[in-house]
Each structure stands twice: as C-alpha cells, then as structure tokens.
Image (cartoon, rainbow, N blue to C red):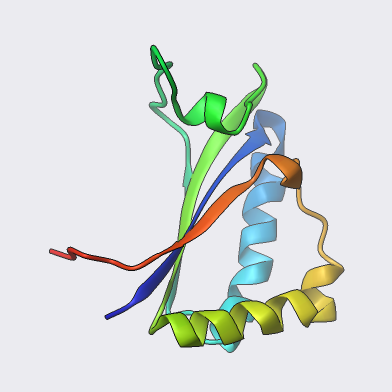
Length: 115
C-alpha cells in the first residue's frame, strides 16, 4: 500500500504563479527520490468554521489562500529515504518558498481506503 505526505499552507494570493513555479521546480526532485505523484490544490471554496477550519489551522491572513497538497510514495520506507534526500539536496535547500514555512502543516499518512 502507498504512503502519503499531506500539506496545508497559506500562500499570498498574489504569489499564485510563484507558488506554482516552486511546485513545478520541486516535482522532479520528489520523483527522483521516489515519489510517484504530487498534487497541488489552490483553495477555491474554503469556508470559515465555527470551531476550526483550514484557514485558522495555517493562520491565513486576509490576502492569503490555503493550499492543500499531497505527495504519494510507494511505501513509508521509500518516503523516509526520499524526504531525507530532499532535505539534504542543495537544489531543494536553494529554493525560496513563496509562503511562510513556519505556518506549513504537514504529516505522513497510511491510506486505509482508496476507492
């Protein structure tokens, strides 16, 4: 069964093109290190919640859009090795993230249903 890394971030609306360029530049690296798929989603219908919501999770400001993305890996072992290589690779370290990385939320997930 696959393994999935999930991400939420707040990106300035004016930086949509820069964010897409960042994602396109990082995609070949993720694939080089074992990822099988990367999906980037730009918030389109992200409602305010009564208790919590996507915007509050990343402390999105008025001029920011929430992105939701995931990376699929063949296994957790491949992901662990691939992410280590990504973090050690100077090509990744030299990239500038067009968002506040301190408000990035991420985690690894074992799929339990894929229909």
